[in-house]
Image (cartoon, rainbow over all chains, first blue to last red; front, side):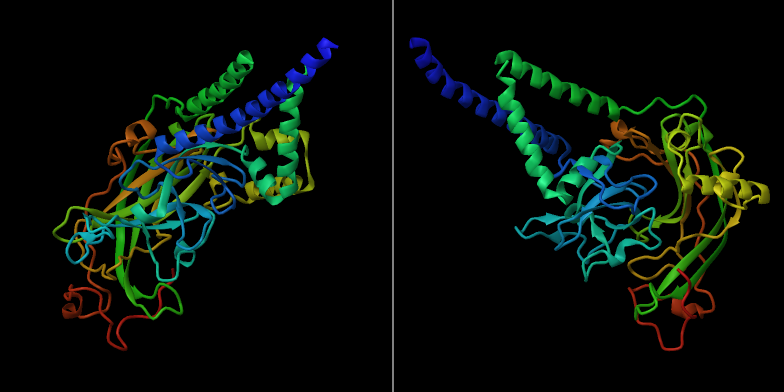
Length: 191
Length: 255
């Protein structure tokens, strides 16, 4: 009878520990992601290739590691950029770089400080016939290094990111995976 | 509980170590790649960026000779070589910054080895497509394909004479004629099967600072000629882009 009470008492503690354990797994992943983001100075340090426009170098589902601590960008470099008003990052190669001279040589930013305007870049997918002018925002014909780029590709792991594509294309898989993960964490304590 | 946490952390650090190791490039072989480029026939013509564009700008078309041996770059971890020729010129006469544009590029895929992925796949999971492709390949080999990469005797050997550029050079100002100090530069990007991407100008380690100029494959500097078929006083106007007079210039150039 006494043992029954202790079992009932210890159970909530156990399950609480399991919940904490699960939270630890999630927060560790999040912290790793964020620290990578700080190290590479990129809002998303790892991206998954979504289109075949850079084939045969990058296929759909390949994982790319980004680096965003360079001041400039060079022709030939593969960069990831966001088009204004769209939320999908695009991975393409820089094919042109122009250093333009504004009237005064410097431009005032919103908060009043003066800054040199970044180089103008034109990109193109290796597998595309034409350059990206059509992809850019309406009034835009070049990318700005400081405003539009979120990183430059430095590392490559093939195919691993395909899981992410599957998860985002079939949302039920996400729920199923979270469920399986939760069940596994809880079952782990049983032995 | 404690050991469970430790196990998780060590599995993460294991993944981290693997990810870190993947960023270290494979040591390059001892023999260095070589490249030699010379500009040949240079023209500046007027044209439009695309058919429906009202904008008219000047385009430089630079033909070139290229003789390069990049075969030392092809190792077991080379998925492809991306070779590109750029033309660079000072942005303005007074400033040192260089504008740079790609005028020609080429992808040299890795050679098929008995243990390469595509070959393993076609050996163990053959499908109709690959069988057909193999047949075509045999046919091509018999009829001798002209400039396809499969016809190259050795992957990484490039020998081009008076090559027409793939892309024309233009500038945001729309002016290209009579620019001086133009150089051509051969560069390459080694795409690995897995790991760090390597450029001729260096890789991650040496890229944290500035990007060094390429070691080999720079042409002598040359000047762009005056606009083809125009009077000298028109091209001497250098105060920004202008709407050209009606009837001036030539039909749309191909892009």
